[in-house]
Length: 260
Image (cartoon, rainbow, N blue to C red; front, side):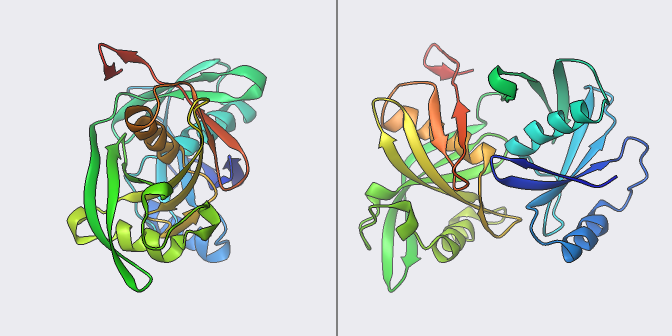
């Protein structure tokens, strides 16, 4: 049975595929999105030989082999809501990794991520913003999916004071499709620091595969939190205000100056 779930505004169609009846994932996704374009993607909940379940996530454009942090949380909630497991701690396989998921305070769901695969900070990227070519300061994080993080107070032309001034459709796509990031491209996160001392950020995210802005992005929140911690303020946990108005909380485990 088709159900819809939302993780902080990140919207998904959930499909029970434990019996393997959905074999043509891509065309199933394209057919569903053709009827309802609102969801950001489709999640097939499947059997796993290495974990309790597998999250097989496809973007709305039909591309698969994708990771989604909010999708993991929705997958766990879907499993519990439909009595597919009574375990309070679940191991979910996604894109060849296993993620530990558990119940947190006030009905929230926590997902543990491995350390980022790659982090690069303070690099320059020449990007076309409106009529200007901007030499943009950016950082890169791969926490299972690739992300660019841009602090809006470092954008010089035009000067940007608030996230609602970001032309995310144009700027996000220009960065996401930048030749230096090809062939896979990257998701793009524009970040405003709300409180350096308290570790509070506001983030807008442009996601590849959706090819537009989403109301929240889990891996984007993680990437933004990591870069904030490295470059701006070593406080944690870090609260992320998403476009939907809901918060995601990112905590960081650090040992010997390394993310664990």
